[in-house]
Image (cartoon, rainbow, N blue to C red; front, side):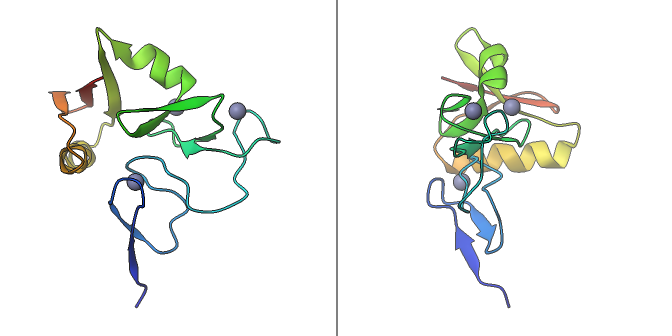
Length: 117
Ligand SMILES: [Zn+2]
Ligand SMILES: [Zn+2]
Ligand SMILES: [Zn+2]
């Protein structure tokens, strides 16, 4: 039986062979390099595009790691779209994970979660 682990950063339950936390983007394994800079260590995995990025290419927004591209254009009037999916179940799972982390996600539609910055 594989042991269940918790993400150090957000406390989400993850499988013990997970390479990164799908909720907050924290990377658990060593030697992951940035998608843009192969010489730089990745600091997180973008919650939207699931690519690994270094600290120059991404940042945390409300505890969720986002790449520069997504953190820039997803922020609108002080809110950030933190997750989008055409899978309604996935969106609802993500929303409850944010709520468990004391965030206050806003479900704009079944396709998009927005949260206050
Ligand atoms: Zn996490
Ligand atoms: Zn991204
Ligand atoms: Zn980079």
